[in-house]
Image 1 (cartoon, rainbow, N blue to C red):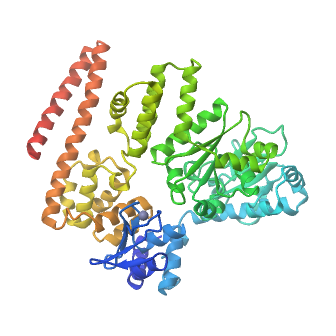
Image 2: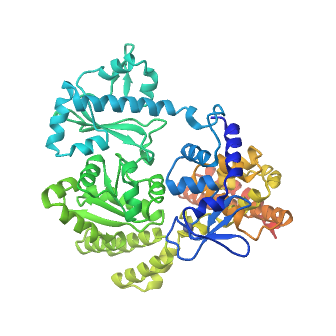
Length: 587
Ligand SMILES: [Zn+2]
């Protein structure tokens, strides 16, 4: 895809569509003195918190942080990818894309990978539905009591027995085998030429992305002697476990509607809930929940219920997911199932009503965790001191200040210690936490954000940054990547900047920079801001380095490594001097 063709296309669409009209077709917009405000459709907004700037073509919600241009708005509202948004908005604007060769992402290198997966999914599906080799699969499915609609909706398939059924089929259909290998459908033979099928004698569950494109496959054995029970596609350019959910293409609307997502492990649990009518469900794929997963979920809801088996392994897996949810500012709910049970066996054994009841009565994770910890202490598994430490650790992870104070109070009661004792323990080390507050305005370190704002507004100031080792002192990835485009690629107009970032995070911070911050009204002020921020960031970087050195020096002393100690002390002196110089500059 050519960026420049795309850029021209984007600018043409922007020129033809008014952001006010677009936003107005989804939510109510009001004119105020300076511009327009709207009820934000991306959070539960009662007071219009979204600002829309007709002239700049941007929107930004000062409550939830959503922001961007018309593309960002449309993409987020409809959960579309950037190329899809481009196509649809082009249609609205009356711009024909076909006339511009190579202007849309059709030629993206990944499109051929999606295509091959789609061909394979169809091949497996046809075998399951009609071919004699698919009989085993059909029989297996009837034992699982899936309605035929489920098989259709989720494109179930069957990979027949034998080493090269798919290889032969792909060859016959002139599909390049090296590309089929890239998506992991087939595997290169070790000692001879050629390939063999990855999935053999297995039921096939295609894994789709949010847009419903097949990105990978899961294969479940039908013969209980085959090992392992499940085989999944390896990771590829289009399939990464850390950001893929099974079934999200089908469940996202229900999740948004019900404003709640039920998180399970693996596609068997997913399918069992979905086919029982619980459709607001998502499943991770052989990995615990990651930050990327959470940021996808957050597009649809902030309420997550985690279901897990209450045996030790299940609890541990759940704990990992829960930590990530807390770190990302969500307050999850949990449903611990009896030991040895998964959602599928629970529904089969106890019935759907019992299961829905469990979900309706789910406990907040923090409550559950408090109970569990105190239980372990009572049983003598952990000491009181350990219990205190664990609880402090948990509270540190809470992002909502109100929730935090509430928990500090509860913990103090539970442990019969003064609140101040817990409070001071929670406070130490909190500076290291990644995002100290869940409010988007405070998600990034102030100096980094201010620096970015000044540069987004006045890109000519990039010369000041390019002289500095700025890569060393910018810690936030999103800010880093936007600065890189401004400093290295010399991008100066905001819309080109927005085009570079299809992801929401960068869009939000760019729109916020452009629509807010009266603190950077003109280039003179901006220049001062840039210098001050650079100095401040350099200083905090030096502080951090000094802190690390201190620890290393202590260790060297403990190890009685005199040589290392001397070397480290020299470094420490140098850095301290540097720090004093920088401090002189700041004051
Ligand atoms: Zn909002």
